[in-house]
Image (tube, rainbow, N blue to C red; front, side):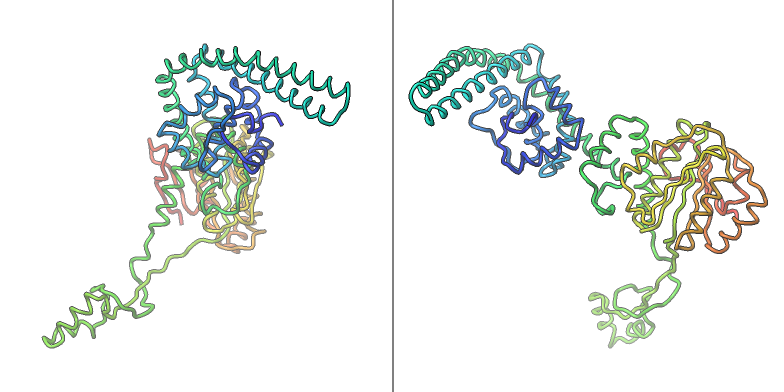
Length: 488
């Protein structure tokens, strides 16, 4: 099929070809790259060199491709990029896409034209040889005049191929010194391209974690989804910027949660062995009071065999649902929306790791409302999260409708003691009837808390329904540092 690996210079087997064919079917961008490549087989060769564990050259194949791939594969940066692409067909595909334009630009126009001429002649030569072989095989199965005609036709085609061989050899002889003369600059350009591709691969991996792709992030993600996410991150600056900010926020938030300690100790739960002098039993300390037992105390201390209290603090872990309401009124367009979506994705990452249910309520005016919910956050696909990050109403502002939707989600959920996170930059009226009626009832029954994140200065409207008010610090545009105010 068009774009298959046999067009390149890297040795491949049936498994490699089937794997590349699957990637090709799943990605229109790779199909386009193969179709538009100025030097046939170069995208396939780049993929094979990044994917295979020990890529090697064919004895016979596109001579131009070999010169280019030798220069590429001799770079230390190529080895560094392969650390994230070996035996990962989709990472290799993304690396090939990153390198495609750079490889083309690294080869001067005159060399590309020479290369294309050589490839055209190689293609013609191969066609003549294939046709000659077909007539030769046909002659073996025929008699008389038909066999003679087939042999004559085969010989004529071989003569044409021989006649083409000499100018092809001359063209390649002319290409080699031209390539040698410019190989230094080509190598430098390829090294820069490889280094950039490696940086992009690392950045892509960090951003992908914001959308549920990463080690230990839940169910496996299909290759097609990985390619779709990569395309969205590359094509849409808004999605890329949100992913970058969310990645930084998630790192800070998750590290803080990971590093929380159980101190100060509040309860004796056991007696264990150790060397914590602050928690050793009084009976052990008495050994120090007697010169005859002092050495025994020192020995047991060195061996961490002193009896001591096992003290633990008590910390409530929220495992209920998390409902995030995101203000998408026109006033949030730009920096505020970036903040809002990044916070939402960071909260999603926490919900995913804590196996919490997660819902997001996009809201604008009273009629502009969209609710997405997952009983398990890990079930959300990258495509769904991309849609979540891209969604934007650009309308007016109404607070009561999204609160009603959040209450409905909480009322339907099987969990208690969840959190509603309300993110906004503005103000809107909420009726006392609602706050004192349905909202108060569900809040009392489900024991959820409302944390309002106000990106701006006006917070009067959120105070009546909020338990906690959080505001980003001035001038702080990419961290999770907030001024927190407890309202209850």
